[in-house]
Image (cartoon, rainbow, N blue to C red; front, side):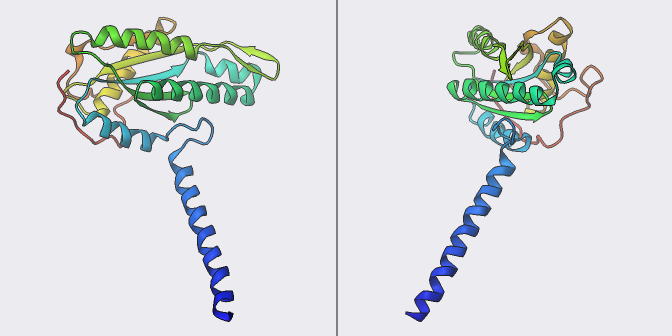
Amino acid sequence: MTALSVALPLTAGWSLNSLWLRRRIKDTRHDPLTGLWTRAEFEKRACKSLARGKQRAVLLLDLNWFKQINDTYGHATGDAVLRATGLRLGAWADAHHGVAGRLGGDEFAALVDVGGTSDTGTGNLNAKLLNLIGRLEQPVIFEGRVIDVHVSIGAARSGRADLSALLRLADEHMYRIKQEGGGFSIAPAREHGPALGTVNGRRAGRPGTHCTTEVTA
């Protein structure tokens, strides 16, 4: 009885410690504001998905005029917009057998199934992105205010390129469409290739994305 009395508190302590560790690990994998995967976890999962060889598309998106939302209404409102964007993007990615993550600030990424063949894939992706924009650009209501949301999305279909190159290419097209006021832009298949050295002078690359794929577009 004495041994049992000693063992029970120890067992309970180990269980609590194990639960705490699991929660800590989960916390490091998920963005605390949006619930999406963190950048590192998104990249890891996206690399695995690309390696399966199906028709995929890498998306990079950010919110237009997000700084004005923060400056006008405050950071709590900005956080509400980010949270809503993350929830909407995550639900959309799940519905399309994909994965989504928050890269930082108002920048998000996703990788989803395109479906179809290399000939029909662009049309399928167009329809999916129109649906995504319709979801993301629903107004966000916070503390009685109606906040308009506008996004820019760049997309690159999987080809003989690694995730880093696809993200840079998607980033290039996101930046172009952002300059035009928003919407989405899909990189033509002919642009797929080695990673670009710079992206409109904005970035030389995205560290940490080292997986490569040999997927036929």
